Amino acid sequence: MSRTHPSPPLRPPRVVVVGAGVGGLAAAALLAHEGLDVQLLERADGPGGKMQPVELGPLRLDGGPTVLTMRWVFDALFERLGESLDRHVHLQRCDVLARHAWNADERLDLHADLAQSLAAIAAFSGPAEAARYEAFCARSAQVYATLDRPFMRSARPTPLSLTWRVLRQQGLPGLRQLLRISPFSTLWQVLGSYFHDPRLRQLFGRYATYCGSSPFEAPATLMLVAHVEREAVWQIEGGMARLAQALVRCGQQQGVRLRCNAEVKRLLVQDGRISGVALADGETLAADAVVFNGDARALTTGLLGPDAPQDLAHGQPSLSALTWHAEVEASGFELSHHNVFFGPAQGYRAEFEAIAAGCLPASPTVYVCAQDRSGQARAPRPGPRRPERLMCLVNAPADAHGRGLTHEEIARCEAQMWGRLREAGLRVTLSGPPRLTRPQDFAQRFPGSQGALYGPASQGWRASFQARPAGRTSLPGLYLAGGSVHPGPGVPMAALSGQLAAEQVLAGLASTSRSRLVAMPGGMSTR
Image (cartoon, rainbow, N blue to C red):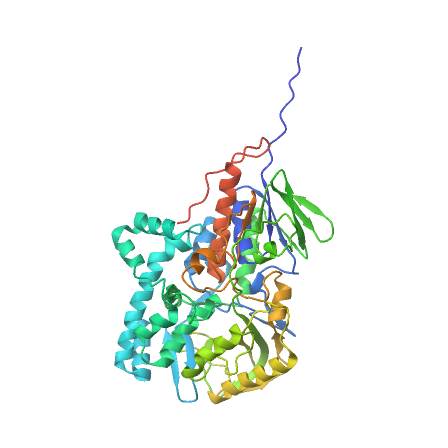
């Protein structure tokens, strides 16, 4: 009489996600929600990536992103996880998008309300320039609508596949709009066709720096950033780190196992596909798939071993920054949450030429986030002489050659920065020494990045298709997420990259015949 032995139980596929930035957090939570066994590894002592706060004694300040745009990305993400974004974070919509100053007399606020911005620009630069701004807003909205689903929410397309997707999703009107996105012009050139006031051209050229690029080299398609910001800017109560913490909680509720202080030193490969990772302490973890949410350049420079793919696209490194975090007493200039202090418009090109040459600009634009100020138009201001938290940022070259900025260079730039703020009427008294972060510090925190904060720079029309790798690599079982890959840098884009990586993992595992893997679901909608 023969005896039958029961088959061993099927196990869920094992996925290791390397890096707990927003892309890794999104990918891990979505994969765990689909029933996979997900382990999330982070080399730092806490999750969040560039959203990790800077600690200044008892104070916590935003260390990277300071506001949220494209909120719908996170509303959809939390909904997919059976949660609500509003349950986890408190969001306040900004009435004032940003406050700009050139000196003590020349100031301009941009508002979420288009009519208010038109009135402000008319008072600042004349009614004709306000009309040009309205036309620019319409054009940037068209660019965004044309590229949203076919480009940003899809696996990285080629020019041909982008054209086909636009035609399929939007028909001939969409194809006509695709021909009008000015892919072969720079952002600076297109801005010149709209704005006659050089200060406005300077102001809107700054949107290229949101992607770590120069407006004199970035494609004109980056005008869509202006639309994204005007659509809605949100402050998160308690700082941007609250969003990362919310994603951690949701992921853990789905079954994600988060391990911090866990540095991956090598990808393991067997039979031509990924088989796991080796940690710095010698531990190995088996995996059916790995999502790498670090800078893609770390793979091609050998930081994760010789088996990492070497055929990943990456362009020139983007901008880096010098940042100063401090507690201060501020007076003389009524700060909003977002503030930008420009130098003379005629010297704007020189700022980016200096950075391209590996130097700090002699006349830098200064961004100031007043974290305790609201973007509400009628928000109460801090009382007289009341300390508040500030982050000051100046664009800087990435540490591409490992030279590092010298103490003398940084001290000179810091003096120029404080001088720029004084010229605009802002008086700052420091409560203590500021916390300085340099490009070489970013390079150490984010291996392979060379200190670049936004992955590859967007230079020329090919950058959208060639500068950033896609989420699926040539090594079976290895996928990419984060700001250095498609669709690009920034908190919402990184989250979209994590979603795309999760979808590609599911598709890849579904097509792999392994007897001990559970049947895979059909994937997730990109709605």
